[in-house]
Amino acid sequence: MKRISQTVLTLAAACLLTSSPAWAVQPESSIKKVKQDQGHEFSQELQKSLDRLAAAVPVLKELRIEDKRYEENDRYLYPFPIWEVTLTSKPEAGGSKERGADVSARVELDAQTGRVLYFDIRHPDWASAEYPDEQAARAAADGFLQSFFGAEAKRWKATESLGRGKAGMSDEKGNKREWARSTVRYQMLINDIPLIGDSLSVSVDAAGHIIRYEAFSMVDQAQAKWPDPKKAIAKGEAAKRLQDKLQTELMYSLDYPIAKGQDGKPTERKPLLVYVATPDRWIDALTGEAVGDEQAAAEEIIPVKGKGKGTNTKISTRQEAESWIKSQFGIDVSKASFDYDDHKENISEGLQQIKAYHWSNESGGKHDFTTVSLITDAKSDRLIDFNLNVPDESAATRSIDAAEAKKKAIETLLPYLDPALEELKLVMEPAEERVPEWVDKSKLKQEEQREYSFWFQAKRNGVDVSDESYQVGVDKRTGAIVELTLRPLDDDMALPDPEKIVSAAQAKEHFLKDLDVQLVYYWEQYDGQRAPAPQLIYQQKWKTGFYWIDATTGKPVQETQP
Image 1 (cartoon, rainbow, N blue to C red):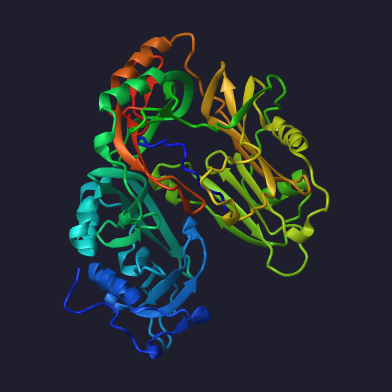
Image 2 (image 1 turned 120 degrees about the vertical axis):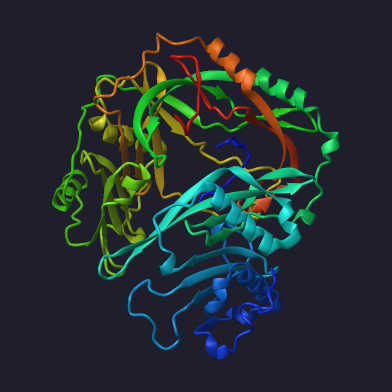
């Protein structure tokens, strides 16, 4: 599991009580399976939390507890033990024979405090691929918080962004159900100042049902002493210090939506050459110091003009996929279990249409691979991604170093590159991740990285192309290619001329006029550990919400809207 360090703040515009308590303590016979690990008991405090949740989501009262499980894990980097409770509408004796026909729900609670960390429900009668109206989703989410937290709900403020997602499943006949959701995220208010990086979220379906709640990162306000906002430097002074640090750089964005349909989905896109503001910094509100990313990834420019072969691998069938895998990597997947997904839901979402091929070997026995997956573009059949998982026991005893792996990654990539492509920018993570001084290193898990991962970004006309990128994974033990991701420039795409643009100074002037700051609290965390104290900071934001300056027209544009 990758550690999360929030030292870098890219924090711009950017996912109860009733007369009849829920789950009155049930007799043991009503619980299908209860696992009381090492004598851990499900306390009354935990039961009260379930009752509060069911009062806010009444449908839960209709379900029975199927399982209670105590777990000591760090799911979602949550560092404390939890209880996982599963509920179902299925009778103890038998139940529906049709897969997915029963209501199921899952609740996770902090084993010590009883606080609800997570909840989701899948109700067959609520299945819908439609998203709720934003205003209705926000109203339903606000209502849930008011019901669940009571007077404490006023401590939470909804953010401007609205997330979207879908879950789905198919029955034995191939009939697919989908549950679309919009997610409202909330930040805790302390001294009427939002706490960023720590939040909760509420997800709502098209009918206004609450179908998910997540609060793993919510903090106990009483755990810390919060810096006094009266001691902060003036907002204008903080803004000026960020303005003094602001720079601009050019970037190609290939997929900018210039027209949308009535459903809000993009119907037409075009490439843009834009100026972006760098770096993203913040100001310590007490000291006035500007702080940014002190451990930026190293970069290496690799000349490749004329070296690419322009190979455009197209795969339209399972047989063609298996043949290509065997010819390129010497792996025979034809006898493995096979699965295929056409991801047709991407059409309604305005996303790239893809086809996914997947092979897997059952556990047990000796195999050359555990899983192999391959993804192609559904319209052109162009290869997008290849991924290989190799079992530990099949690995050779030798290992290769980073330099040898990088050489192999570039050699693997060259056949697929456009011969006209001038340069690749290799972004390399530091050999050793910077660990904050306050971290207790004895509590960190030692994680072995089994592969080198090289991420390349294309540069054309000397400018980074944000949407043209390539990734190659090399197994550290065997030197085998275990990942290959290809996102090239379309052959017929014409990029804006970098010689016919407004000056960097003109773009900077736009950014300086729109730059604003917001006073927020931030409590750094690393691998489940918290810094000794939270900070009061001014974070960078934009008054009008634009992100870029169109370098051709000099006008501001937004990333998500035409």
